[in-house]
Length: 117
Ligand SMILES: [Zn+2]
Image 1 (cartoon, helix red, strand yellow):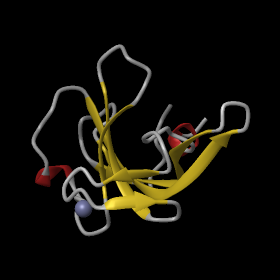
Image 2 (cartoon, helix red, strand yellow):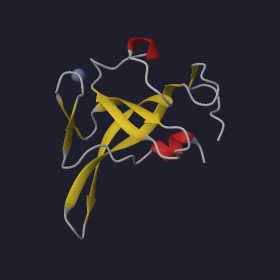
Image 3 (cartoon, protein in one colour):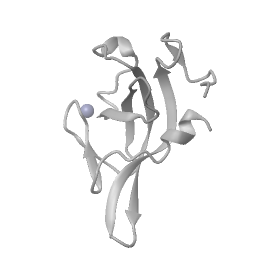
């Protein structure tokens, strides 16, 4: 399974909108977003670290403070999902494209290369 596949449908927030981590702009269905995720050692799950609007989206980890573990920058759009039984809605990530990751090699590389599983 590709990493994009894993990230597609990622639960971003609750409700019908989320906000940009940087400027607090409200983001809703179909809005383009860039998300930052991190994964700790011995952890198989990605944790959402930040969600940016187009204007605030970092293009590389060099713009961000260093953190432990593996980092991932990914762009996509927001989709809204609803659970028909509970009537709850939440924004998810759709059409994810990986921009940059520090996975495995701890050397940055771009999405045109295959991400090894
Ligand atoms: Zn923003």
